[in-house]
Image 1 (cartoon, rainbow, N blue to C red):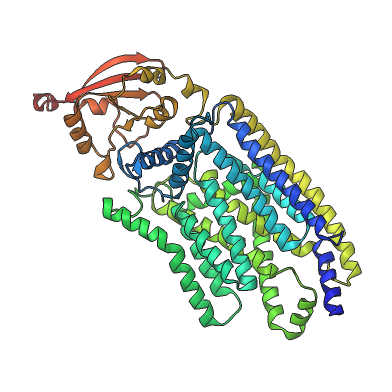
Image 2: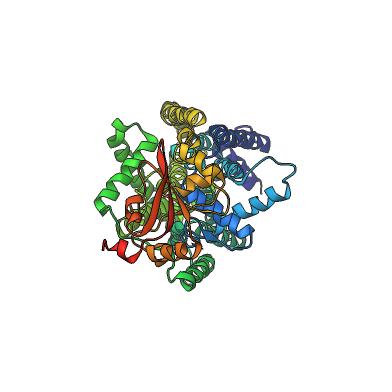
Length: 557
């Protein structure tokens, strides 16, 4: 017993508890909480003047939540069709926020857009906290946990996506909680942890369809862990079935409604080599300036190689009785190899899934938004890997000296590296505070003459536009897209003609600039509808559809 007690005390010293008591751990946790709070206020400050940034996706989420609260179900913005393009969790969360706003209407001066900004700020702060908590719990090292938390706070992609009313912050938070529970399960084989894995993987899949990568990652690591094969197969099947069931039910609902699982998808515009190159170029921009991309790629390959070797080494140690006993005496605060493997396997699965998907179907070019879920896993894996080199073994005095030197060098290197992302974030935060975050939250949209005209259009009149989401954000009025040239019939010209035929006149609020190329513009609409120009404005024009073109007009006879 005395020997066990001595070993535990040694483990605590090895793990980094220099004071030898829990008070030190609570001080570190308090510091991590302060860093988390800093992240919350960083996001709020950026949107203090113009509100959180928004895009078409943002408006689709908010409109679906409002349609649900009004009793119409989840409806897709712009075409009044079933909401199928994304899973339902984020609109459901916004619906709950919307109900709370309505309930506290007399006490809160807040709309859904601004409330969503607070929600994403909260998600960002929780990501910082749980990242630091996992590092502290897994290593016991104040240096690793604090630096890891700061690295997440100074994350270029995370601060970017958290400024927008997007589902990514919620998805990344669920991903992080999934990885923590998976780590707990592999280490302790706790039923509670397995249930946690199932819940957070299922919720992530209900947030974004790419959440399937969590289930793939979980299945790979559950099968790969040490244990009896039959037990691993059973737990993998249980995990895979229950974590994918809610999303499977949602996609079944989509298919029954409009004969598609995840909405209409067009063929890819970019090739696999193009997507592969742009992915690594984007990843490099998070960590190093543009002129140092080659160095980043070399460091990335080196980190992956060392990670694989570390996992193999720990696997061999477990299979060697002598080394196994030695490792038990030098306990590593859980299986460090899996702490490295879990986030890095996910990052590899996610990036591979993204590159392949982008090469098969068309969606936004691979950018900070799409890649952002890979940042936290990649960062966690690297910090766990660094700890494996920085830790000192019990009774090894030379090792302790090396550990001190390694930590000192790491801190210097970390502070030098931190100047790049922190300067980028400070500059971008000041810019979005003064000018808006761009897209729909900017001075240009707020001062648009077309927007001002739309505000004066009487209620009850149908409005269509090439940017109906901007109208919705800046006027609160519902607007729709002009018909799409290809895709599902729900969004096409024939359905639009029926709407005009049944409901009569409609306004077209058209903005100059880069309109979506897949919708009918003013000149193309004139071939099918009787239209008159109401007013030419700076930055756009207002037209009115008075009906369908007659047969003779349509064919020029």
